[in-house]
Image 1 (cartoon, rainbow, N blue to C red):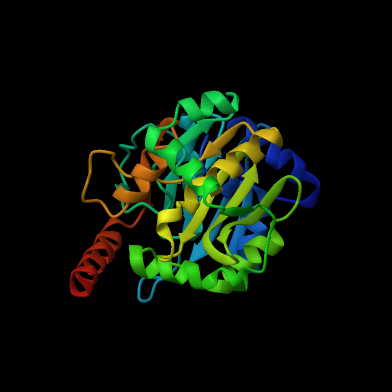
Image 2 (cartoon, rainbow, N blue to C red):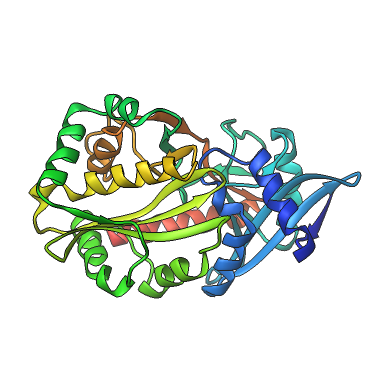
Length: 327
């Protein structure tokens, strides 16, 4: 097998391969558009085709990262995407040649038990819920928790207004910061999200900002991405004010109906915890997402693959100590 850089003439074939062989959740992370966006926000990104006997066996966006003292490594988001599980290790062996370890979000459900593979903290969510939009609106409503249906109607009755067109990101940034502080979620810098909305706006891969307001006050804001027949809820924020108006519920319901109207097949809620884990940081947002109904989808998680185990285990030990100190 050999790796070949992506060229402009093969971009269309790249996304077609991805749509045929990619995971159900996070498909957009290996689109050529997402790779180009990562380059525009300052990351060093390679996009490779993995070919054997003239036939494509896999593709991957590869983001290069730097570690003080230990040297560079690379990160493969929700990949590598390949035609079968048996090609995963062969592709990673090609990627690791120029790096001392590779971190990747395994795109199969199979557990990895090869030498040199270590389970690590999730980068992309390993659990999600996906709602099938082929159902009618009445069927979708019926599959929701009764409290979710009630909150949608309450928000509508109270005059919450939904705007699904991209608006000035400056108007919602305070709400994102507010949510980050309240719920303990990390944020990228504001320019990262602004570039995401402005750069990824093609018919094939479209990121947009949707808001719910009351009396010109932003109560909820979502960053969504449409790619490959799936609408994904990437980032969300909600104000501390007027929480009794239930704006986030109405915002998602309008986004679901709009996706159906546009012929999108799936609504990916992008990250939940175990529904029985009441103490998890995501417990509240998981209850919220579960209320809309959908199918549980789970992947094997994030792994590191290294050919320098002593150096790698030393790095893990130092990282563990640093995390203890932070706590």
